[in-house]
Length: 118
Length: 114
Image 1 (cartoon, each protein chain N blue to C red):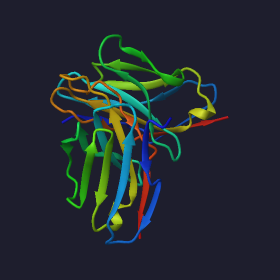
Image 2: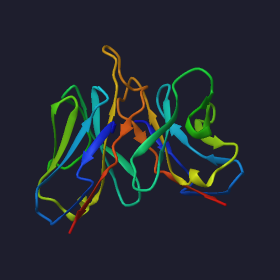
Image 3: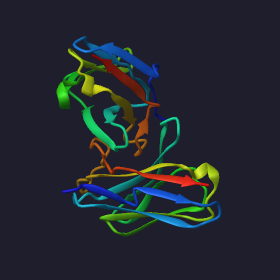
């Protein structure tokens, strides 16, 4: 069974379009994340959600909007796509014990979505 | 803010030889340290972590890492490398309770040659 899944795996689109990437985890985790990995393999956190609430919002253009309909899903919507948005986007999740921060838990990553903007 | 550095972009070793992938960190408190591996066209997989306790931690696939507070390092090691260990390795750090996010290093590409 896939723990963290993302769709689509590949996404090729033109500048100016709007697109979404979906993420689902079946691990029962409370916290989910979006990361961007650029062409040099540098991994940078974009957003973190805990129980459908935004926890971390790094310096990301407001063209990027995460949406969490429930704690098992965290989707990423991107408006007005630009060439620089081309990257691999990873979703991840981690558990949290109520009343504790989840810092000491590892994250479980999805397979990634390779976005190419032409 | 916490940060992590992987000083080597590339590490090459021969199969059967020991390998070391270096990681140093900077935090304001006591760090939580992690190692992940990324195989081609795959997501990151957790290898091991240091939270507290014994400085030598053992993880998946025969990997281990040693936490050295005085040198602020958390180097990944394996006594005998396999060709299948060839991948991209990421060190990551958290700095609780000040910061809830995980910061990743730039990654080190390990190539094990037969």
